[in-house]
Image 1: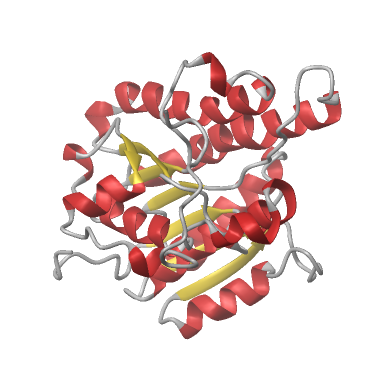
Image 2: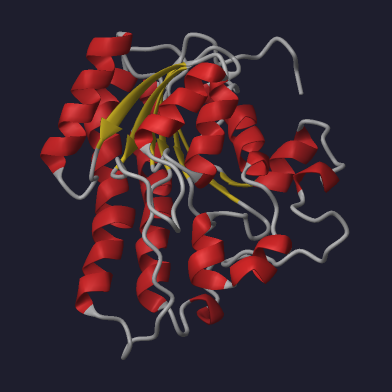
Length: 277
C-alpha cells in the first residue's frame, strides 16, 4: 500500500469498537496516530465477549493513537448526541464515521421474536442512520470526510432472505444509507461507502452464534477488514463514494494478493460470508 497515505491526526468515531472488526479498524488507525472515539455498550468484562470500551481504549493508546471511551447504546439518540459532542470537544471535530455496530439474529419468520426484530432494526438500520445524521454537520467541516458502513452489497437473491429475512433487511438498510446518502451529499464532498468481508471473520459472534471454534478456524482475522478500511479511508473522498467494497478486492487494488497471513489457520478452506453469491 502507498506509504504516504495516513490517518495521522484524523478523528474516527467507530461504533461497536470494543472488540472484533470495530476494534481492529481502530487499532489500524491508531498505528498512524489517529484519534479514536470508541462507542460501545460494554463497560464490564463478559466471559464470552472479551473486551470493553476501556480495554479497547488502552490498546488504541498503546498502538500510538489517542482514545476516548464512550459508553453508548446507539438505540438512543441522546446517547449518540452526547458521544458526538464529547468527541468534538475532545478532539476538535470528526473526520470519519465507521458504522460497525450490529445485531445478528439468523432466525426464520416464525422463530424471530419481535424483541429481536426490533433490536436488529434499532441497531443496524436506525442506529447507523442516526449516528451518521448526527455526525454529518461535523464531517462537512473537515477535509476528506468519510462514512464507512460495515454492510454488504445489496444482493436480491432470495436465498439471502430465506430463513433470516429480518436480519437481511436490517443489514441491507445500512447499505441503503450508502446508496442514498452518497447521492444526496455528493456536492458536499463526503464519501459514503460500504465494506464487507469475503469470508467469515473470527469474531465473538462467529464463535458464539454461528459455528463455534470450527468456524473460527475457517475464518480470516479481523485485520483483513481493518486493512481494507484503512485503504478506503485514506482515499480522496470526492473520488471514492457510493461503493460496495469487498475486503479482498480492496486489498488486491492496493497490490496485496497474498492473504495467507489473514487466515486464522492457513491452508484451511475458508467459510464464505453471507450475501455474496
